[in-house]
Image (cartoon, rainbow, N blue to C red; front, side):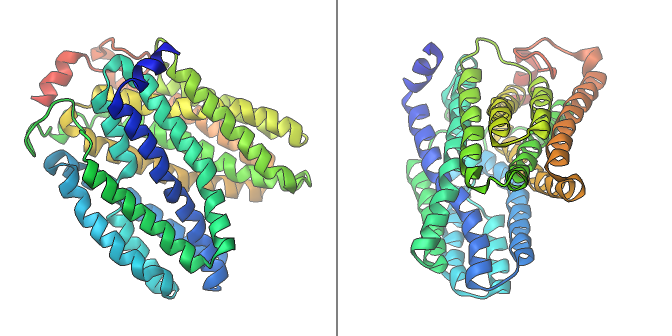
Length: 408
């Protein structure tokens, strides 16, 4: 546990991981509350709820790269101040209006989403050395898993205890409060203090095949996870064991928590493409589960690779993108993950309709394997003549001389 002791001894890392975990809880609760609000309070259809979720997802994904660029150019406070004001205005009105105005207001707010995920990762990267970064990012991934497990439960409980209107209003105001806390705290997002806009790196210096591949790996990993999450519901219903759904999902999440902690403690990182392939391999056995017990066991094993695959991708990204471009780069990374999650839901749902839960798990796993192999081969073919040995093993990572040249 020495690696974690060293990381947690850094006050900036300790504080941003804790704050990140707290502010992500309303983020995950909000998705559930929106769906419940549309169906229960507005008496809309599940199609309308899904359409609203799709609009918000696309808007949030589109906001990542350009708002990340603003963080690189103007700093955190100037970037999130308009998002705080706009979010407060939109969500003060949205819970009280009909479906179409809610759709418009939620979309506008999504385009100016407070980039909590990107800010937390940038702050962790800035506060750590390359040797400390892997366990620090693993802790961040574990905090995301914890928030994902807690947020939806609290969202549903709030909707049951109060009206969905009050629950949605309160939840979104918590998101606004999170933005205010980030604005007041203003965590350091670069390892060295610099004037606004100084050191901004041209996109062409880092937006290359290896970067695109890492975004693709992150998107594919989230796709596998998202498709599996939906398929769990179908599998448990097929077993006639609905009451065990929460337990099985919790076991799956526990596997991801433990996997993230184990990966962060490794002395050497494992390439993201290798972890994606491994995630696909351990997802396939869930297709042959014959009951809740075997589904829980195979789900726990599959969960062990979820957090490591995502941690490795952001870790490698931080090593190939210089500081002056990391805001936009992490914005692209976040957009890829968001779209990967949306595609995973479609993929899982389609396969369940065609062949049931076995097809859902099987195709999700095969997709992860194929994506990992394909992206690794793409990078290998494009970079083989000029590959430089770096701190990771799979995707080629530029050495310090190339990173420094890009930063200058």
